[in-house]
Image: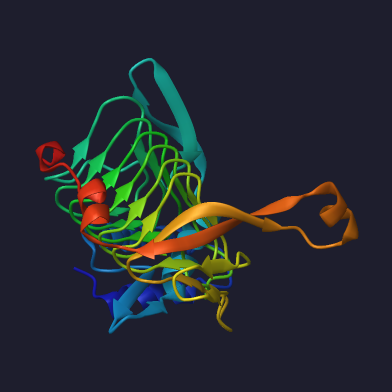
Length: 279
């Protein structure tokens, strides 16, 4: 088994191009990286004492997969047929995970912890990490390198965006025990701390100000370009008056996410995952 250091050194060797005649070695490095990602030995970002570290070489390896891959037919699925980069096929379902029939796809290089449930149709892209007991609901997207913790619920139609470039940028991260409501969208530069609840339709990016009505503060992206949703925050969509004379005259407002409370027992009861759904 290749060590993480070995895989990293092989990936970095091809970071700025693949010399002629070394395409096979580059593809082998990609295969080893994707295998390590699927087994959870490697992650695009890792936590330590509340801080997250980006492993840019993992993203370099995923980009290498696109660079060296050839468009080729993929194994047919019943009456359907597909063609994609031959370095990034769909992956087999790991033991202890439920992938309900109906059109979901897991790309190679994804990690799914024991007890994960994926409802159809949903899509989990390369480099994503999904913790044990998490539910990915219908029409949900987990983007490239997104990190989702344990016992989360990503509701129907929710979008957890992916980040491959720039390689040093923090991917979208959702920590443990978070509820992401239906049709919510989390995009570049968003870090949702544990036990937060995002109501249906909440949209967050690094450029979105998040108003905390409980503490009378505004959360904005830090100097590293990361917008943090505090642990246990309950976020809903609201509005604020748009700026400018014309906006005032026309009575225009801008949609704005608001922290209306912090998680309590009543919120816990509403956000609880039904254990009967688990494998």
